[in-house]
Image 1 (cartoon, rainbow, N blue to C red):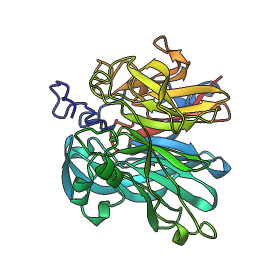
Image 2: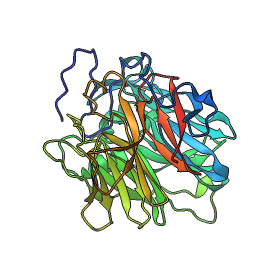
Image 3: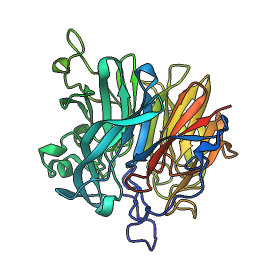
Image 4: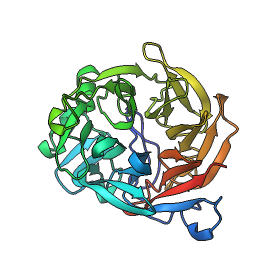
Length: 388
């Protein structure tokens, strides 16, 4: 377990045991200046514009059929039952959701999803990433930040925390297709003392799904199998395997956060880093299954997501100067950057001054970025940033 940074706030900003768990109890004030959080009606087609508001801790996002954009909302936890995790007591609630943005309007298409958080909705974890395919089928990554034993203490209603689940939009039926928390408890691939799991980013490949377990410091894979069609009754729970383990460097756990398939077919994985979350200390790894991960790009800071577009790689830094810098607390100020192979200490910033940005998806020459993931319930947004 990493030591807690010394702050005078009641619940300090932290990321413990490799999990993307960010204290947010004092993040309810107004966000800092942003390139797109307000004033989106400028009418300038080259300016960032707000395309969704009122979100609860928006995380990763992806495009589905007919150009619809889907956003995972981690929610704000609840009041009971509660369990003790690396950051203290976390209480369960069904406040997670998925929002669809299409044709200039937004609507929650999945609600009542599991979420855990500290007092007042601090450090929410729940839906982290979502991919919607044909016939309304979705695969959802659900964070937890607890070990399997602590999850079990929350009761059967919490069984989908720490998993990948599948279902259909418009249906309440879901199936667990990969239990990452159980896999971490049984295998603990990185050998760390803690066995907490926190599923985050997710991508579909030719062989199934690959995703990051930020708590387990691993990239994992699972295959969703069907028999004779796409019906939920044909889905089977798939075995989970570790694709690679990310190393601890200078006492900092890696904390992988998201994954994307590159133009060369390799997997590219973003890194937050553990405490003390140094500026320019994060990397993007290139992963070829069966080989050790290599560093594709270095000199980045607290990266939470990445996306390729026309051979260029873009990344979101949740705190551009580091999570424990003056601009990292209480509301982190981050950025969207172009990533260059090798050292990125001199940033190529596309948009800066973003309040706690988290996810990015790219379509038709524009990046869609979730912001205010740590600003409190109902304050999250998605902004559209032209890439030029």
